[in-house]
Length: 108
Image (tube, rainbow, N blue to C red; front, side):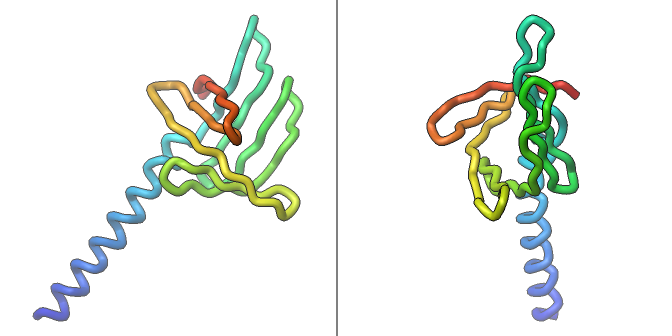
């Protein structure tokens, strides 16, 4: 009985941790952009399957796999790993690229 209870509690803890780590990634999923005068100058898109694209003036400049832990996006391009700190408030994605702040609005 104790062994069954221990297994159940351990499974519950693992599932809880996995669900908590998915929360930030789920909120991040979709397209975010900086738009001025109807022109999309900078955009980032995150898919549920861990793919991201960064576009400048409508041209894709970066394609990468990404993962999210807490409020950090980690991605790798050409074997170089980079990290971006982020927060989401309402429909605004706030990013910190090495000390430079960006705010993007949810597109879809």
